[in-house]
Image (spheres, rainbow, N blue to C red):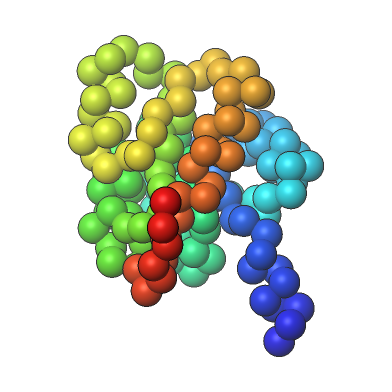
Length: 140
């Protein structure tokens, strides 16, 4: 039982990204920073992983097969069991209208590709602590 509790101390980051090379790169980066890496190749799979693994943060590509990142985020934010999880849109769409569309879908932040590793890690670190399960109360 203690080992299970210890493994929950390591923050989980779900990366929903259809590019396998990018997922592999982010897996290495996040693992080296001490995060547990979870992955999904499309929006539908991302929803399934989020439901079963309850990540602390979701990094959501917008242009995804099966279910795009906008709709996947809407569904996450409508689900009482998931809506507390911060979702950051990570996308090559860099127009202001695209950022607003991501925020309107429920994303908590927006990161444009290409991004620096420093910017990426800053976004992760800023948002990883924002997860608040519905049954917990924290003071910010």
